[in-house]
Image (cartoon, rainbow, N blue to C red; front, side):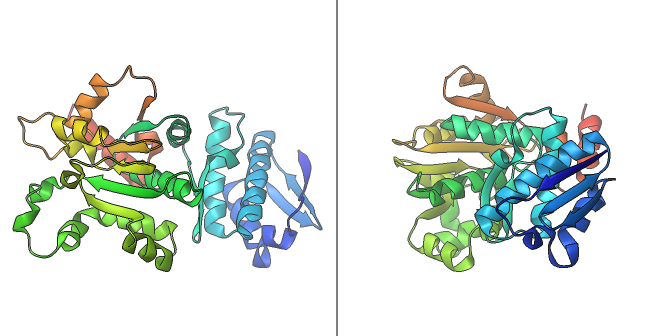
Length: 314
């Protein structure tokens, strides 16, 4: 089956990349052949693949119009997204699942679970994202927060997590607060560095537009017009979780992420995340998203490792 797609409102050379690099990346993921002639893209392959490629072309066009360019990394992300979207029989264009455009490329909800997660954040003020490592819980939460900040939907971002490893007794550790907490917040800083240019990120941090602090330092505050993230929430106690959720001020949003299989609390302590899932499940405006092994986007062996440990613990 052959189908011709006309590239509208974009430079076909930007689409194809230097030496047709982008087209070669697309062909490496499909069994179809793709030929660019002028503004026409001729695709020869199975109907199912052509449907995936049609959605991919829409998303690439959208990305170019928003960023002014596209690279091979963007292409790979959008390929996975297009395939995932069509496999889930969704009629929504994959461009609706682009969370954020960054100086390093697009951040896209790639799997069925991640798409549901992103859509839930758009519709609800409080979202709990629960699942194993590698499912993009924290990364996607940070992307949603940065997107809201860039679109002037909020005035600041607050990212926090329990510092159980230090017993929350940070006063006994050497150095100022930043020096004490930073080692426990490396994954969050990694995410921010991928989404915000270094100079701009430093400005945000210096001006406290983006604030990163341990959960214990949230007590007594009310956060208005902010996007708040509680990471590693499985390590919060019931009282800490209640304290965090009641910090939410006017026009604020919150995402709570965690993996209930990886709690570092003492054996006699109930996880605040586990408790919240049970206590708050019927409240309108609060959404609970459960991610699983099919949503893992790390090395392909990570899925098998998690499945093996899960099987061994049963």
